[in-house]
Length: 427
Image 1: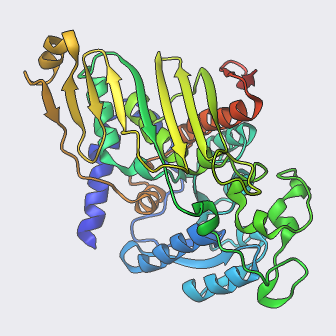
Image 2: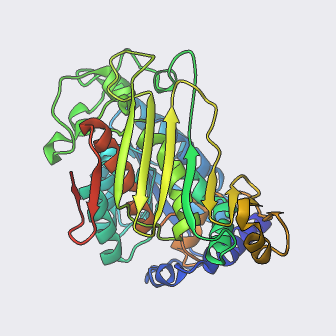
């Protein structure tokens, strides 16, 4: 276990620290970082499938990382009871009770998307460090507020897109920064799924006995889930499908864009633009609901294109109708990079001589990497002041703005532009 921790810290130094943007990240290190020998006490907010997975993982690594989960929260009593059993701590139906505790250093947030921004901001204001699952927020206004709150409070915030922990994307940025591909002009990626029953239904089972009018383990605080008191979602009658399968509805989620493509865009921005990413200039999205036409509002085919001020474009695709993937690729004037666990760089067309000059005389070369590092461990190290998080609030905000603009572009059937000066969307 000790060697795993050392390897993780070596990655922080050799991969993230070598990027051009790391100076800004280092300045964001928490002034109140915990020492290496101090135990970090966690609270977990949101204990559905993803939250319970994180909760179990944090408990399993308690000894090796000197942490302890002391409390958990959910709006569904059955989940609260289950979480208490896993962590042997306290349980709450209202996250504000958890945040009131002065013995909690950090929280992990895995609620439905429309709550991410408010809970994260409330946690930061309460003096907690925050790990928030992707997407960082539900709206652009929430993303900007959370970004500003992180910078004002000086606390650590980690967003959870999986591949930001892949060393391949950090090494790709070094290669691009060193001119090994020439001018990068576009990139592509996808996150596609396919099943006989849509996974947004199959993975999220409905508990038929649960509801706001029930007692005991079956009780659900439906009003708190909606968050209508804070303007997070409209007030509606109890609808089990909306509660258990929230990703199918625009009120609480951006569908495949926020659930899946957030995982892909964030690491691509690391590779091309660096650790802090880049805000888009123009975004367009298309697609539709073509196959499984139930009560869902989200599409099962979603295509996103985004143009950036640094003069490159990104194409991203997410479907629930076919799981053949569009490979992770970055296209430059001299060559093309395929981004798997081991990035492969290949010369392109008439510019092979320039490519060979930048790549040791070879027309094809590989970049060896150490694979993927876990985001929970990275967050724990960052709270202790041992290095930056893989997905910081700037990258999280830049990714969120592009993804949310794509969702709105799809829903409005129009191309949207980002006004960087006023930080607002122009239709």
